[in-house]
Length: 360
Ligand code: HSE
Image (cartoon, rainbow, N blue to C red; front, side, top):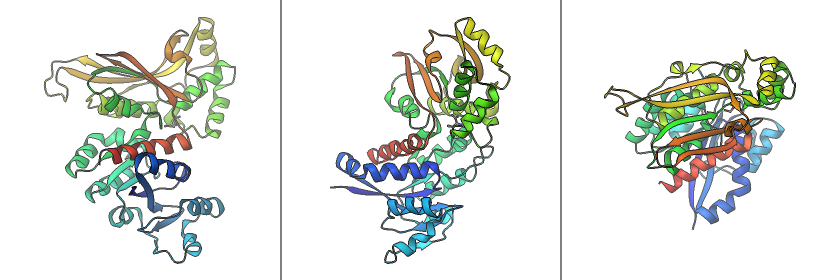
C-alpha cells in the first residue's frame, strides 16, 4: 500500500530536473521500500512557465518538453484530457495547489534571500511543508522560518544548502543526537577547492576559475565563491542550526582565496603543506546568560589555511567537500562527499522528502 505525497516545484532548473530524473528512475523502488509515491502536481518556473494538475504531472513528458522547447505549457497539447491549469505564479501555486510539500528551488537573490523566503513563508502559512536548496534563506532567516514552520505544525528541511546531498545537516541534527558539537571545521565550497587543487598542478588562478565555471560549480557571480561569501553563508547555517548560534553572514571573519598566487601554492607544496579554504565554527565560553546556549557563544571564520599533508582535510581534492564535527561523546566525526551537482542536489531534496514522510 503506497501513500501519495504531492509536490509543488517552485523552479524547474538544474536541481528540479535532477530531482525529476531521480523520481522517474527510482519511483517504484521508493514506493516498495518506503510506501510512498512522490507525485509532482505543480511546477512554477519564471522562464519555463507553470502547470498544475491535482492528480499529478508526467515527469517524463516534462523533462522532454524542457529538452525540446524549454516551455512547460506545451504539456497541454500532449495530454489534452488531463485537468490542467497553467500560468499560475509561484505564490498562487504554493497557496492554491493541493501539494503536501513545496520544493523551493527557484532563482534567489543571495543578498536578500528573496523571493525564496516569501515562498517558504507562504508554504508554511498554507499548511505545507517546505524543502529548499537555496542557501540564502537559511543563512539569513533560519530562526524566523523554523519558528513559523513550528507554529503551523509543518516541516522545514534544507539539507541541500550545505554540501548538496551529502547529509551534513542530518548528521549534525539527528544522527549525532545527544552529542554536543563544540567545533565544525570544513571545506564547504567546491569551486575554491577545485581552483586550489588545479593551481597545485600548475594551472593559473584565472584558468582554474574559468574551468570551475564551465563545470558548473561556481555561483552566477563567482565572487561569492572566491571571496568566501558562499562558505561563510554555509558556516552560518551550520552554526545556527547545529550549534544554537545567532550569527549573521557579516559576523563571519572572512578572507577568500583571490589573493593566493601560484608562488604561495608552490611554497606550501615545498614545505609538505597544502592551502585549503577552511570554514570554522566554534563555541567559546561566555558569561552572557541571554544566549540561546547560555555559557557559550558561537563564532565563525572562513580563511585560506595551510594544512600539513597528514591532516584529514588536506587530502580532500577537487570539487569535493568535507566537514569535521568535534563532539563531546564521540570526538571527531568527518564527513566527505560531493558539494554540488545536478543529481547530488536533487538527491538532497529526495533525502529531505523521505525525512518528511518518516516524520509525518
Ligand atoms: N558554488 C558552490 C560551490 C555551489 O562551489 O560549492 C554549491 O553550493
